[in-house]
Every structure is written in C-alpha cells, then in structure tokens.
Length: 295
Image 1: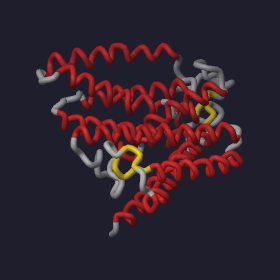
Image 2: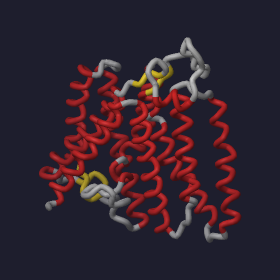
Image 3: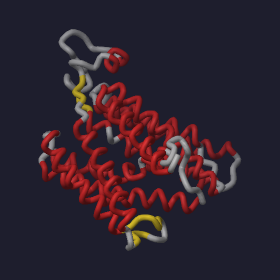
C-alpha cells in the first residue's frame, strides 16, 4: 500500500473518530480527549527518554488526567475554582518524588515531567470551555428537583449542562483545511523552504496554499456555525494557520533534538498522536484566548 493511500485511509479514520466523538454528546467528547491526552503524554515522555532523561511519566500523566477532569467539571459547573488548588501539592510532589528515584539529571527529569503537562494536558484541557457550560445554577446544580450526583450528572446531562460542538468542530475543520491545502499546493509547487533547518519539506507555497484553503472553509463555516461572526472565523483561521504552523515546527524541533522520525506508530502513515495534534497544542490556547476576549 502506498504511503499516500495509507495516509488517506488513516486521515479519514481520524476525522470520523473525532467528528463522531465531538458530535455525539458530552460524555463521548470527554472520553475521546481524555484518551488523546493520555496517549500524547506517554508519547512525549517516551521521546524525552532519548535525551537520557527519566521523566515521571505515570505521575505526569496522572496530573494531566486530573487537570483535564477538573477543567471538565468546572466548565459544566459541578465544582468551583477552589478545586484547582489540588495541583499545588501535586506539582510539589513531582520534586519530592525525584529525591527517591535516584536518577541522574534529576532537574532534567522534573523539567520534562512538568513540560509534558504544560505542552499537552493544559492546552487540551482548554477545549472544555469551547463546548461546555452549565445549564443550571453554578456549583449548586439545582435542577428544580434535587442536587444531582456526579454519575447522574455526566451520564444524564440533559437539563443540566449545555453542550455545543460548533466552535470545536469549526476549529478542527480549519486545521484539516489548512493541512489539505498545504499538502495539495506544497507538494507539487513548493520551491521555497519555510524553515529548512527544522522541517525541509515545508514550503512557503504550502503555507499560503493552506491559508487560502482555511479562509475558504472559514467563510463556509460562518454560514453554518453562526455562533461566531464571519470576521471571527477568519481571525480563528489566521490563528490556526500561523500558530498551528509554529506548533508543527516546534514538535519537529523536538523530534530532531531527540533523533526520532515520529512520536509513535499508532496512526499508520501519520506517526503518533503527538504528530497529528502538534498544531493543536499551540494554536488552541490562542484560539481560546481570542474567544474569551470577544465573548
């Protein structure tokens, strides 16, 4: 099977899983991105070991998972902001744990452990605020009948939370449009290298092709997902294409620094989840900040 066909099949599979998980309901969204965080962080920590660092991968993943869960529950109004204080002792424990691990380069290990959380878990946790909001009173969850428990709250979210997938779907549509445009234009016409030292295959022609595709899709999206104005979608497209490109280059820089081609092999033709979501990790926080600014 040619690499192009393999990439195409895998790409279609990724789109189906992401769109299906986002569209279905809040629970499928939660489980989908929880899995993405876990796998991406494990890939990051595995790559870090090529530098002879020994990050606390399981404890780091645990902190990342807890961070995502706390943000999910805060976004739907089940908990208040005081629960974020739990991360102070968890971060302190990263330093204390290193005392007992007897590894070389202890502060390098600590740095990579925390960087996995900052690079993967924090950006993906911001996704919660693009799709979720409480339908009842904040933190009281008074439904008019009784205060619900957490299991009932998540598995029967109707009347209790507002789940809207439009902005998140639009965000991913723009990323895919940019990737498609960069590939379609960059492969046959790419002559001028964008950042040869880091990524020899990327070209200015591919960049502008991707931006053009993303702008066209943003105009179409603005007619379907009217949560935001056309101008807002165009600005988000600009953020996704520019900051997302830097996100791709940053991950390529990391791979080059540790001497690996792909972050993993879970996605045939694409590498690992870290490879697939590299543009998301940097562009999503900026999109989140922009949406908070305009709303």
